[in-house]
Length: 340
Image (cartoon, one colour):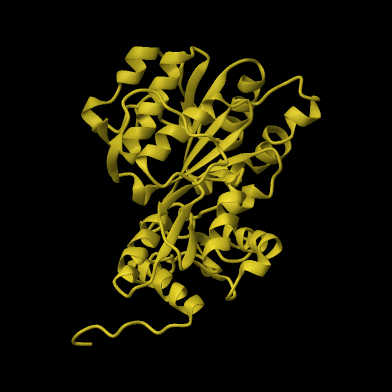
């Protein structure tokens, strides 16, 4: 085991994939310069360039600033035998390539009757909570959940980031990975050797018995904080991190709700038609008789993201907001704090 940051784990997974398979390439804007430290296992700017030295310019390719061209080129490369990892930087930039994503990347394996595969991974960073304004703060994974043919991962820890990315590169289907940049500096022990985490298998981030909280991306950490805080009030919260949204570990979620009888879903994306709405609908359809209280969603309001740090901070799921939702489904009031 070795201690890695979230960003470092992503870099390690990319390095392992490129060492294991010469068909794996990295393309994107400024990847040769390694602007974000992602291809060099999160090293400092002065230490960058080792990927270029190890794998050469044929496998580390800069692209023009044209997301439609980048995604289209990656799709063509994947269909002709390569396995591209595409760094698209801000997740908000995915919108510029929607035609390529929806009509080519997602559909071509079906349209060619399975004669062509689409082994390509698209990385993007969600810069919410970083005061980057409306044009750079989106969390668009729910939008892509509505596109058949795409697989979607939202790792919330360095361990998951490395293991899921190694799996993603091996798949013959297109994968979109959404990284919360607020997690990039998060560190934990990660195996140095290769390992993989299968898609569609969630994890219990915190065991509990009174309420199930399904948390997505950075909301996982907030949910665990809430569970720890609520334990002092005698409330036992089980936090589930689905890790991938497509496919989704429905069995784990349903089994937890059947034990606890209550569900809270914490999702940094917008409330309407979001991942939280889909998870809530699935539980309502498949485990309604187990529910002892209405489902509660803790999500971002349907509004554009302001530049103001003070205003933006209030929008996303927090430990306090999740704790309040848990008390609501339990029908209890918060414990008064000393001196309050």
